[in-house]
Length: 241
Image (cartoon, rainbow, N blue to C red):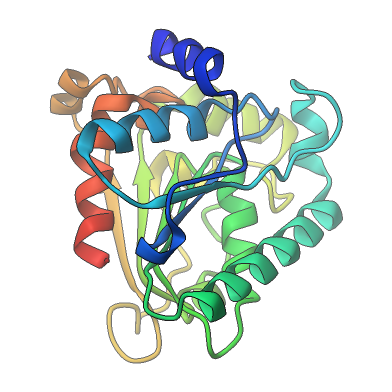
């Protein structure tokens, strides 16, 4: 996984956008610290899978790369960043009304993605929202975000104890609660109507040992491995397109 990341950065850097948005767009949100791991690996996986769709790297971070606590703790700034993302998604929806829109987010970026989904308004809806290793609290109210999402996938792993157990207990979640994060064992506050009516379909996908064969050993960045994205995430996005 590290080799794919290094090669991608060396060849292409991290452009904000690549691909043809008329075919649809996947908005990519990395975790805290601004390391750009997720967008780089996701783009490698998409190319390998032949997934011909635009990718948009939304850089919500502040300060220099590596300032993890600043990204994690500034809730007001994170909500402003989410509002900017919502505006970008709404503009993309107006420009390409028939093209699917997806968000693939990781760790702290799942908070920005969820906050943005809440602000999309009545006329814009995401085809897919992926919350991988979410650093939101399990009790975060998901109802408003789900109203603007056709399908939401929450990727969890009970092995992610270091960052989503101890880390968020000591330093807090992205919505500023202290305790285990939702990416460890799942969300608790999902409306009972999810899956029908105005709420999007909500699906939790827990880690299993067979995913080790795809480079996902259950640790915090396992869901960002190229084989895992290629074999597990791309089909979810294709089905919703």
